[in-house]
Length: 139
Ligand SMILES: N=c1c2ncn([C@@H]3O[C@H](COP(=O)(O)OP(=O)(O)OP(=O)(O)O)[C@@H](O)[C@H]3O)c2ncn1[C@@H]1O[C@H](COP(=O)(O)O)[C@@H](O)[C@H]1O
Image (cartoon, rainbow, N blue to C red; front, side):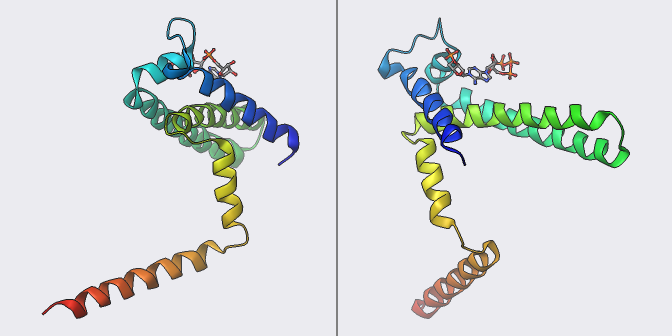
């Protein structure tokens, strides 16, 4: 991720934070302030909707790719557009819970180099030994 990408996310997160009711965000003047003012049900619903729109745009893009031809570029743009909406609304949710893009990036950095398959196997093994330990405690 370039420094510019990082900065843009941080700038947007700072604007979103300034729209929180405690920071004086005005629901009459700001879309973000309005969503935060309405509360979790409102912005979580948007996160769900935008995620669904990403999936639908991606399915359309897959069909366009399979068919070839001139529709591919427009379909890819639609995926990009919907993904931006999803990121944007996810940033609003993060702000509500006192989290920032930097926190998400730190979590991804923590996972860096960790194989997803190894992590999954480890998690299953831990769950199994927890169950075995609980079984042993049964009278
Ligand atoms: N990046 C965005 C951004 N992306 C999308 N949107 C808005 O998100 C809304 C929801 O998108 P939809 O496609 O679901 O539109 P809709 O069907 O009208 O939505 P609803 O009626 O369901 O709310 C639209 O009104 C978009 O304008 C955004 N609104 C704001 N920002 C950023 O947030 C900053 C602060 O915005 P305000 O708080 O409005 O000043 C802006 O300067 C921008 O940087």
